[in-house]
Length: 137
Image (cartoon, rainbow, N blue to C red; front, side):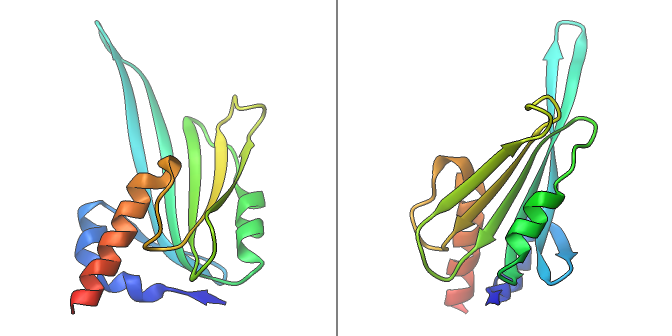
């Protein structure tokens, strides 16, 4: 069982970026939905969503279970799951839902403090900021 749930103590960072507590069976962490709007001359043309998950406590079987459970939703473009690891190199796994027409699901394994890849640089920045804040205490 990986448990980096001490990062939850940096609640001011998570609240500022509108993350909410999230749980699925033995996995837990944070969740937020980001709205992307496409505008034209006459106003809004389209609206899409991206779901971000930062998962800091999970069993070995949880990543695959969560990845398989990712389902298509209307206007949901991306479901990104960032699993925090205690050690190891960054790795990723991606899949399209209905040939990409119904969105994408991404699974990322990231070790806090390591160099973040471009795909998760925003989430990694927040994780590293939370680690730094907690170390100061």
